[in-house]
Image 1 (tube, each protein chain N blue to C red):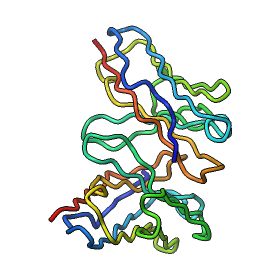
Image 2 (spheres, one colour):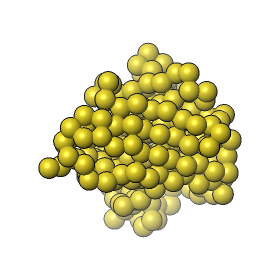
Image 3 (cartoon, rainbow over the protein chains, first blue to last red):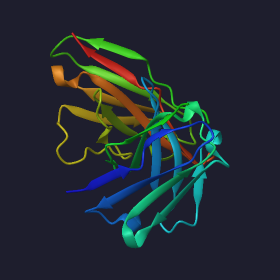
Image 4 (cartoon, each protein chain N blue to C red):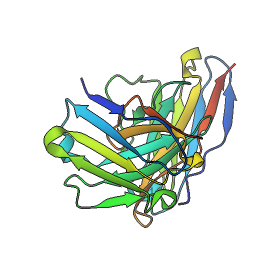
Length: 114
Length: 110
């Protein structure tokens, strides 16, 4: 059974940093683009970033460019999101996903507040 | 990044048919199609349809997806109480080089 498990969320002050991790299993992780998608409280889904199978290409939504970095370790079937200079508007549940394949984790909550 | 357009809400009676729409352009929906996702409150999204309109294993045959040009559609027949949820479409945009999402449609089964 495919499993995608996020971790690393929590409460952080504005301007702070946080690193999210995602562990995948039971599918060929290294063969798929992976993404982070977030959902602010009571709002819709928002794409955050995607990374190519081998990590050579990365794409970001404009609002996080220069602040967030997506990366992956195919040997560990893991995806990461390094977040810095966090703002209140980054508060959301962050999902790790292979969007086109339909593999989604349960999400991890990031709260940016003083 | 511009998003896909979905009606905010649709209400139908139990047992009726609902058709949800998702409008994009030739660079996203019209390019490779859209995935459809269902989300119940407090739960992660669940894939209902791949970009080629095929259903993943385990998804009810009451659901079917299609595409006509730049508009993707999801049809649910014989509406059940468990179909009440938020529905999102998403597509890869080759110009924006990003996934774009619709704002979601809240389906209410009366």
